[in-house]
Length: 362
Image 1 (spheres, one colour):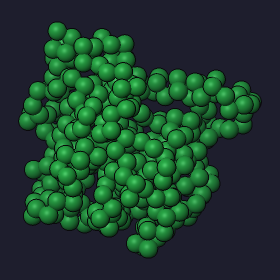
Image 2 (cartoon, one colour):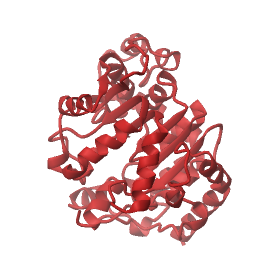
Image 3 (cartoon, one colour):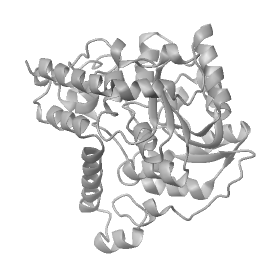
Image 4 (cartoon, one colour):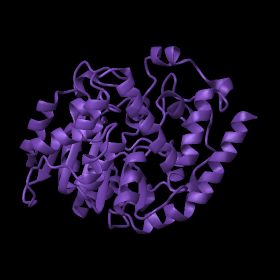
């Protein structure tokens, strides 16, 4: 009965979000019809499975993601992308639940396209546009950009030719087999008009579904992108990393790199936008933070976490409610596994890309 209730809740969210997604299809930042066959259409999404899928391989279900990692949204990192870089067209490779893409779409009034290899989480991505729709559009492409099919490659070529103001990929490349990395780098760099923001797991970082062959240090990734013609921005990189702290101190804080496209006229800067400069709890007002929390202890972390949770509840009330109910065992309780058991499963994946490559033996 509980899972039936969640299905009805998700279905209502999807139906109410159909209009926004339809607008997103018309306003896709790809600027072409070649990607339309891959757009996640809520009207075509099947029944959303509310069990804890993916514990022993395969893509995760909504409950699996919400129960294990929640929304995992870093509010001030998203502000950095939105206000500091001020994009109007955006491409995200590996968007997960799509929260960062949705934030940029609404706060910047941008046309955002996010790429995931399948539509397993499409219902949740669609639901983001239910609450506080604001401006901008969000389109999910359920496409494997490494496939050799003519339709996939036509879409990839058009994504590249569209030249987005901002292209970003966060903690995804470590899930992509190494032989596909040249294609990944080419897609990201050729699609970039102004800014590229990249983060990937470093060797030994740990994480489910990470491939050792695909894990590199940030210096190694920097060299790869510079060889592809991107210009490294050390001051903006530092700013982006600081904006990710505390919420994503384990990955984005250590791994993020910011580049600009050669020819894009913009100086590196250490002057943050006011939407970063005057906020604590993950913002860049370090003076007030140090006065209130002189030690980097649990209280300081908990304050930042509480700010992030409040931000999530304000931005996505229905999705945040589902997360809280999942945590309390109200939703999908008969299917819930302990986090200890979940962590012990060898092939319990944290991204659609990890599941895709394992499932297809690529």
